[in-house]
Length: 467
Image 1 (cartoon, rainbow, N blue to C red):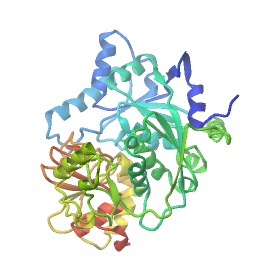
Image 2 (cartoon, rainbow, N blue to C red):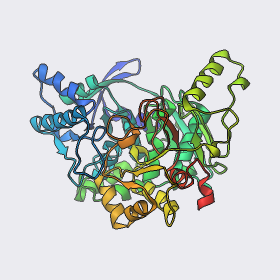
Image 3 (cartoon, rainbow, N blue to C red):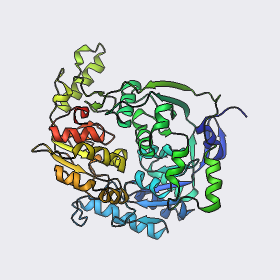
Image 4 (cartoon, rainbow, N blue to C red):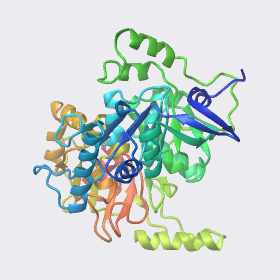
């Protein structure tokens, strides 16, 4: 057999029917279900008189629309309330495990999947959300799907898919002080563009990746979608095994031993050929911050707002003008001089315990700048419990942050937490397009510790001055 990449190996193991021309019917091991994409899918199979083929292969949780304020979880939006109620009803009717908002397993779908051990190496995992690529950190093929595809997975536990080309991104050199994996992925996207990964399944490798925690690997794979790829992956290793051991839905006893043996064999062959391969030096990176309306619009924190007049292409020049007009920025302005109104720490990108610890370290014995609205939102009830046991909630509260319950919160303007028109945020989320955090809102993407530093300063600033 020809040498194969990690992606190709898992793909081959899941082919039900090969249609040729790189298309196949692919078996789906796991399906995470949330309130936004599932109503249409449930309605479709019910209209067709079909049942969910394998209820145990699905887990449902509401995250996008749920309120996170600590006031009894009251909904301010009737539509959001209806979406969550409908998910609960559909899950019950189809015998699918549902994780309630008030439960100790509730959270953002891409945080609770790994926490439960529902996400496993070597599997194919899908969800009606683009950031499903997060789960590839565990050495599985994970990708987002649409509502009609969710219905197909419910009914057939399989999907017709086109095999992606393969790209290996070698991250080498380690991380300098004050630099996190969020800075790495933002800088990478700035380099290859938001279309750099289109059509490719990306495998991350190299010394920097090997040194990353599982939480950091999830952040890396999470934002693969912002680079244009549907799939981001890291080969399983001892860190993967240690993270999954004794998780509620992970294999147990002799099945665990057999699973570990199988998982540790999941890696690209040494002589496997990738369709594209790049090496990215992380040793000289500085903290990054986005200035525009795409993660591609990213610069080191000590950079300046670019000038569209330096661009020779008329289309690109006009596009940058419109971007700067929307963002309310003037060419030549130092990014570190840009004042902010709101700070959001959370999301499926940076709502894990490692992220909260990093932010709390910066905030200890410091105060949020007057007039700044700052909110910290754990990615799951489990993360929240761990943070509170460590006293992190007290650090956030003492600094002047709001301490919230789990949910997507201000990552996406589908719940109570939104920016107003013209309001500017320092955000640890993954997207900064127009209106993402609220109609007319202006979003600057950065790491949790960078966001914490911005909260203290009242403007974008270099976190290294606070470490």
